Amino acid sequence: MTTPDFLKHPPRFLFFTGKGGVGKTSVACATAIQLADAGKKVLLVSTDPASNVGQVFGIAIGNTITAIPKVPHLSALEIDPQAAAQVYRNRIIDPVRGILPESVLKTIEEQLSGACTTEIAAFDEFTSLLVDSALTDGFEHIVFDTAPTGHTIRLLQLPGAWTGFLEEGKGDASCLGPLAGLEKQRSQYKAAVDALADPHRTRLVLVARAQQATLREVLRTHEELALIGLSEQYLVINGILPQQAVGQDALAMALYEREQQALANMSAILKLLPADRIELKSFNLVGLAALRQLFATDTALAADCSTTKWQALAAPSLSTLVDDIAKDEHGLVMLMGKGGVGKTTLAAAVAVELALRGFPVLLSTSDPAAHLSETLNGSLDNLTVSRIDPHAETLRYQKSVLETQGANLDAKGRALLEEDLRSPCTEEIAVFQAFSRIIQEAGKQFVVMDTAPTGHTLLLLDATGAYDREVNRQTMGKAGHYLTPMMQLQDPKQTKVLLVTLAETTPVLEAANLQADLRRAGIEPWAWIINNSVAAVPVQSALLQRRAENELAEITAVAHTHAQRYALVPVLKNEPIGVERLHELATNQNLPELL
Image (cartoon, rainbow, N blue to C red; front, side, top):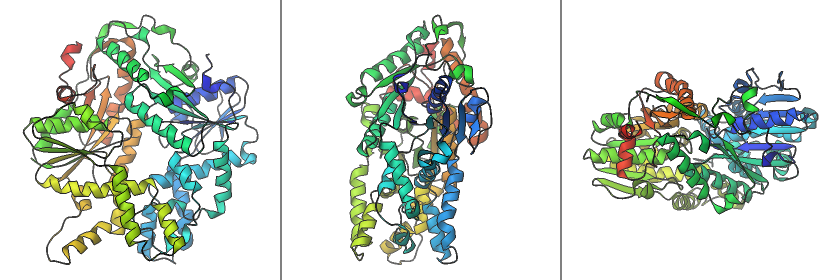
């Protein structure tokens, strides 16, 4: 087996991070196996909420260190972030039950329900693996599938003593909750953060795909982690379509050329990192035999061309969903999903389809990495495009909070408030305030939003009553009905939420978690969109045919388990840029040219 650069002279701790669906778990598992096969005693730890490490090895693992029977020297542990978050919440909330009013407890519980808490709770679990010699003394290497984000580490580095500030009720719409009650463990967390920043002990491996959007995401991750001192970083670009697998398949050739262009145009900063490239394999990465071949060249691909074509899977198109949306003649359409699944492209496609049907449409985004103008590549009658600047909106929100809530605080209280306002939740709330101004437009036209606030943020705003209070203030107690943004989002006649995913295990599980988050906020997703599907197009390349077969289980899960309605969007030969190609994407009109 070939030894990748990131595995040469490895330190004790290896962390793998990246967006859902890029192959972190496969790369982490293959790494652990290669180290164990070399005679090293290895512990593989997963903190991924969609962890399938046990499935990969074919055994149940769970939250105890479990030996992998068929791999001498290898053990594994799966940390359940949700269970860890519940334990963490209980540890913070239980001591004040019966002391604080029930309304305050409910607000604190909601503050502790977001991604911030889940990340820190998982970090709370694995810090002991970084600093507790009793648990890890016998292991020469510890491999982590899913590293803490820069946001989590920044939170742990903040100097404030948060508990009293939270109990005084000054947090309001924020994510103060995650830091409440951390003082007792601050020394352990500091030791863990120091270990992460020590290049002699820790190596961070950024996993990406050869796609422009994914490479932009991994660049942001690199810069975010480098800013807080985590400089020992390696880059792995996974799942690159090998040239020998292209054959005479027009789609395979287009995908190959697209990936090569993305790699050529990759940021100069990423090009400076030590990097490995892993080819897309012709087999499922499940089981030891497959994982042991991940870092090797697949010699079976030399003549990887089938004599038969894969027949495109029959499924509803995006245009079919738009037909139903158009029946209301106006309203809010929000596209939500994890990074790298194609929300911006699909938001543009939905907006184009509505505009082509003659409806006035406002297309808006708050994604700093979104390139709507580039995606549209022109103008269209009935379509207006706007962009919310998250940085500007956050500055506006911070200024407003400091002038109101911070006006009567002493120096210590104001410093704590300023710390809290530097969290990512602050940006999300600030952007939602800007969204709320745009929402009013949905009463007379279609408003299509790329990148929506999460259910946690919506619930937090609702729990604090911020918008109800603001509406009351603006109406000055006048009689009559008023509609808050939260009420509008909960009304399926006025708002349709479209969840975007890929036909892969991790993105589907992440979208299902997002759906549960929204349901807690009283928002029922209207439909799911499965993007970039190989199963939706006819292909001749044997490798792509196998990829299509692998998608079927996830498409079935979406269609019959997760979604009330869904659409399947095909992977295109050409980048979906411009009105014509966005229309092709929505209607599957590209299929004949691939036959």
